[in-house]
Image (tube, rainbow, N blue to C red; front, top):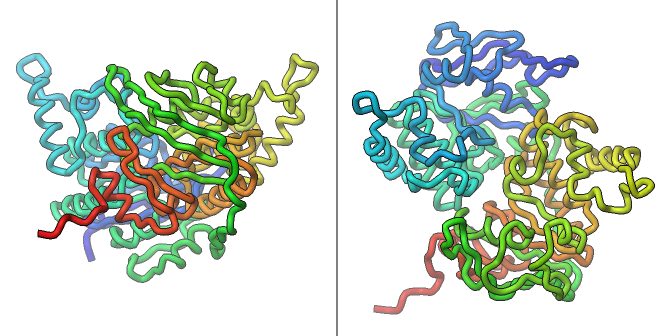
Amino acid sequence: MSASLLRMQGITCRFPGDVYANREIDFEVQKGEVHALLGENGAGKSTLMKIAFGMLPPTEGQIFWEETPVSFRSASDAMAHGIGMVHQHFMLIPSFTVWENIVLGHEPTHGPHIDKERAREQVKKLSDDYGLHIDPDALVEHLSVGERQRVEILKALYRQIKLLILDEPTAVLTPQEADALFLTLRQLVDEGLTIIFISHKLREVMAIADRVTILRKGQKVAEGDTKHYTLEALATQMVGRPLNPPERATPPSIGAPVLALHNVSLHDHRGLEVVKNVSLQVREHEIVGIAGVEGNGQRELIEAIVGLRPIQQGKITLHGESIDTLSTQQRLQRGLAHVPEDRQRRGLVMPYSNKENQLLGRHFEDTYKQHDLWIDDEQLTQDTKEAIKDFGIEPALVDIPVHSLSGGNQQKVVVAREFRRPAQAFLIAHPTRGVDIGAIESIHRHILSLQSQPNAILLFSSELPELIALSQRILVMYEGSFVGELDATEATETQLGILMTGGSLEAPPAA
């Protein structure tokens, strides 16, 4: 048996109001292993890892690092011992470049000055060595979510840590990129690194993890060698019940066009063309999926449809009428709903309560107007309670600030608000990012319920099984253009992955 690297004994974390995030958890990671940590949203995974990383003190319990009792006073203290963590919500400085974020606090110097060229070279070499390619001079505020995640991984590796905690590391990768990451992780383990792998993708856990620990409602309910579990057993242990994936009924006949793009071209902040002459139509009762590695124009296209980015060429129509000159609020009033790719930056006001976030972008609706001056708080409270029940938001509290919720429950708040909006065109970006398998099942049911009505749904997702399961057809974006369209009933993850990385599905000519 391998030696213990990190051991957490009897860990309890209690918040004011007698709210328990963790209850008497024993958790051990052995040197040189990949250890998966599973659980539903709100199960206590992030809290446990924040304690391990020095970001929260335990109410009760003891931490042992290499069999020595320790008390991490801060994340810096944990990092000094050799622990690195890539959080679900990234901790980067948006106005700094990639290399500045990675070396921050560990800058190479030349005399009294920072050796910028050596720092850039070190970052470039590190990214090339591990296949996490990123421009070291790019500003973080201009990066996609996927690119920011790569920066976080590189930042941890730069510090030569012994234990790397990864929270949903493959959420924004293609299958080929995920496979490459797994090879990298195995390479790191072979070189002596130990990894805690937090993921909701059970197939990945089965593929990469040596051992697994499962939490439910703040308590450990199972642990053991991954090889002793089946996918079904892991899922059942996570949610405490058998799962019943939604059966897809034959959708009604596709109807009239609702949302359309006509030869749309877009520029980025540097004036470079990032979306190139794209056209599409989404009709009533239709789900059109958009696949692509992040950073290939999807974010800019979403922003243009919502009204957050001007278009340089072409037009966007809703119900046959141009919306190019309309504000975002006017587009919402015309029947557009939007689940953004980044819930914290685009979808929520973090200090606001669940109830207040349910109102965002809906304050103009007659449902919530009282005497044309005030918000009908009673109606809003009732609707928020219904959203909590329908989407399983936990804790089930109307007035809790959303910054107190887990990432997955924050996502449920956004999805609940947008899916309940009186709209006909639904622009949905990564609806299940960071949510557990039980919540994924629920969100998929709600998307299919939207499709049963005369709605048009444009679905952006990095989860290829999700696109295949929900869409009628899938368009693939690469370098700002649609490079392929596949019937979802015939598409495979391999085919989509090839198109997403610039490949062709056409057979090469015979020699």
